[in-house]
Length: 216
Image (spheres, helix red, strand yellow):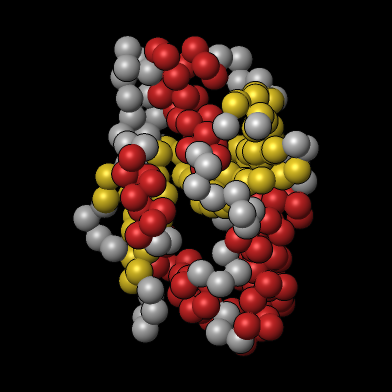
């Protein structure tokens, strides 16, 4: 089956897929304990961030047979805060807004200050994992990073995702992100690559086309 990677423009569509994917993960369960509230709150939260990334980064979608199978959301750091973010989260998260604030503070405390690209979210639709689609999404942007000799940063939300990122050249940062009474996240850094080591990946991403097909 052929998988096609495209640049996304629909923040709501991407935000919905991310929310559906992470609807029951440990971070979401900590942020929004009541099951009934998780999906509507997280859809608005992720859509807000995807919309911001459309102005300050890159949003990729991967499709199979025309259907959206996954999303990757990158920011070019440093980037500005979302205007009115606290007020927006308070409006849709209600009593859970304080936990979003704690998460944001912890993330900001550990976030590197030097220029880099930040992988905020990568998500695959249910039933699409274990087929290499996440790796294709990573490689699509890594080719651009290597051509620019640009490092990357992310917070892995689970041991499973951490193992994936280790295979793609990321290394653990010195300090874990610990949520009070909740799960941990794994800040990770991918060092910039020299142009010589990036030649193959750079040639694949030359011209930054709007779409690319892959056999999976």
